[in-house]
Length: 109
Image 1: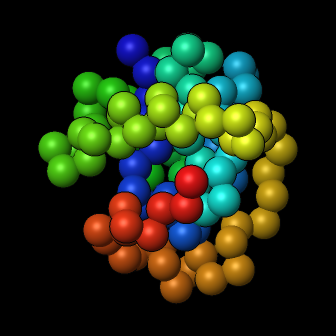
Image 2: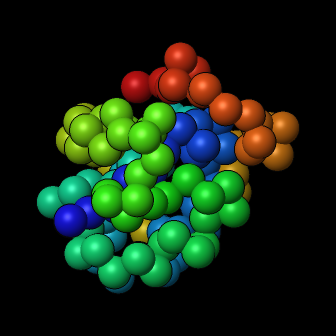
């Protein structure tokens, strides 16, 4: 099992979750974080840290976000998507985007 970052993270990229991850499984893209399923140990400590509730255990991913499990795996392997282990400031307009839905078209690879 692994955890999945859902569309709620797009255009926000709060990084509270990376501070608590014991295995450095988060990868940073231009406007989203992902979880590398090969690194995630299913510890769940990241879930309560996310201020936009974007992280779910694989078996709990909402039905309208199921596509994000495979997308996390794909994106976490892209060459420019590096491991992130320290908290950073969120994107400048994160607070404006945190409650928006259907953000997949806004994903930057």
